[in-house]
Image (cartoon, rainbow, N blue to C red; front, side):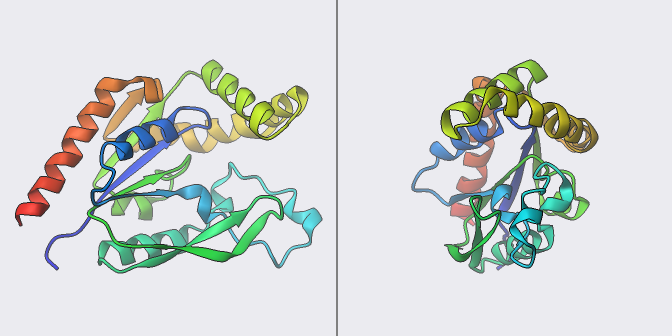
Amino acid sequence: MDQKPVVIGVAGGSGSGKTSVTKSIAEHFQGHSVMVIEQDYYYKDQSHLPFEERLKTNYDHPLAFDNDLLISHIEKLIRYEAAEKPIYDYARHTRSAETVRMEPKDVIILEGILVLEDERLRDLMDIKLFVDTDADLRIIRRMIRDIKERERSFESVVDQYLNVVRPMHNQFIEPTKRYADIIIPEGGQNHVAIDLMVTKIQTVLEQKAIL
């Protein structure tokens, strides 16, 4: 096949709104040839480690991700071949035995905090986005999410943010902004940027329908 899918990377810090941006874009194309791949599904398998060791995993560090597997799956999808996406079991802190079959699509949106960190991933992308949101908004959003949805205490959320999330963001996530083709301030609230991306993807889909 001469044509290949368009791959869009959406990066940004925890609580930046990158997931909202991705969902807003994808919702415009329900029923069309668009798929979303979350980098969070590709945390490394840790079944070989004792449970106590798994608890020490720093999920905001690049080494937590199995980018080799992610890259191989994207390469298969680019060739219009199906791939089996892993499922991560957060209760056991390792990969589940189950997978989810991904069928090829014309537009692939790859979303995650560190999707722009690995040069090999960046080289597979046609469009690279970075959702840029102030730190105070990001910590508030994370706090609300973790307390309400994950039943975390206020103290534990603050402790994790100060000791893990913030330093990892400054060291690994924020520097990837320079690789972005488009920087989207304020995440899902930036309707102008989202509309621009929707228009771009629509153009791609229309071109593929003609070819």
